[in-house]
Image (cartoon, rainbow, N blue to C red; front, side, top):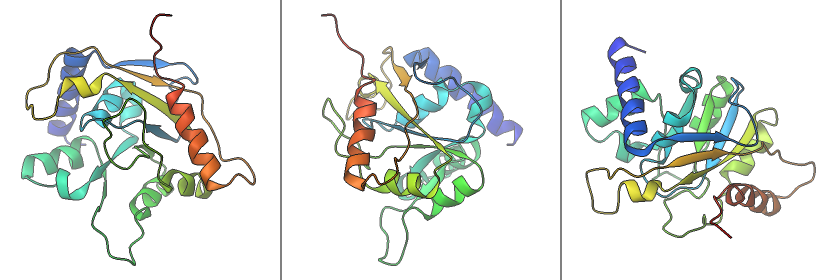
Length: 208
């Protein structure tokens, strides 16, 4: 990472924590330097920035977010930011039939990187996550030794309301849960529903 990119990363982490608090709560596992796939609910473009900022500094360098190529490479600064600061894994949303959408993720995992993914595939606007798509299942099947860590991102949709361009200071948090794994003989539907429930279980509960 270049000095400029390193400085920008520190600045973004500082601003994210200033605006949102970017609190990380490790309830099911410690923040260890293990290869992991962090999977979370998805409600804002800021989701992966919040997870990245909530990670300890020593984990950020090896944890890469997934970014839509058509959106995050649009414009020189946006492209530089995602490539040089976040070391994002770019995915193509418009693919031909012979393209494997998981190919860049597989390459990153084979390289030893950790990933931040959003199994819903697109941002949701409901209280609970939409059904998970199959990518997480196929990655779990192919990389059984990589920890699958569920995470719940709370309040981030209020930081950048739809149509707004200036973040609103709102206290946010990321709660990391206990790792799950694909059980022997477990089918895709059962695994994806169990993974979704693991994320929902981390949702903060209001007062009784």
